Length: 96
Image (cartoon, rainbow, N blue to C red; front, side, top):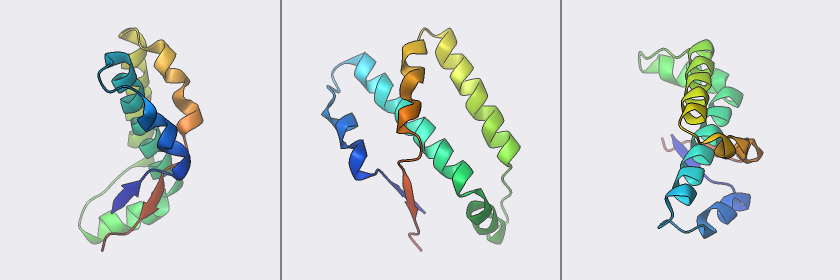
């Protein structure tokens, strides 16, 4: 399975990777984008993982995302949590 950024995500790559704050912004946006894509494609992912003997849970995905957001907020990265505008831009394609 391959996760590819959307053409609209190119603005994220115009940031300075020498800046810790910009790297953190990209990391947060990428994580949230992938989690949202997983939630939208959950039925497909669940079936594909099951074919390989793996189980995934939507509740567990949402719980992990909630904990990560709390960790980021606790680490003083609250401003990066505004990155929800990045959600839903990741598309999925099969590498098989």
